Length: 72
Image (cartoon, rainbow, N blue to C red; front, side):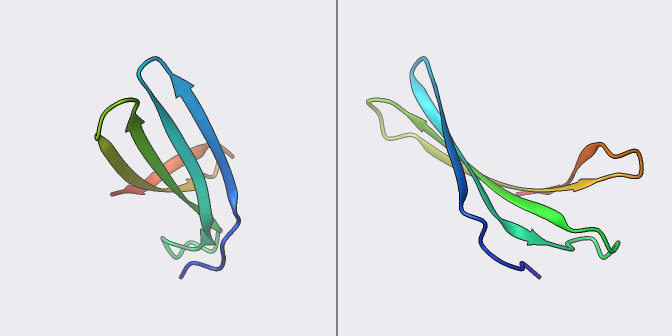
């Protein structure tokens, strides 16, 4: 279902930690004929051992706005 790896990656730094956001690829997750985007977000705390990872699937609705289809 996932067509390929895009390799788009960015890091956001904030007080006490940072967040990595990466586009994993695209595919039609909800079978509506529109390509959806698969994104992973990783949260870290500086100087600690906290780590959190979330996966999001985003699509574009009929109005052309982004909407969340699934999150894990």
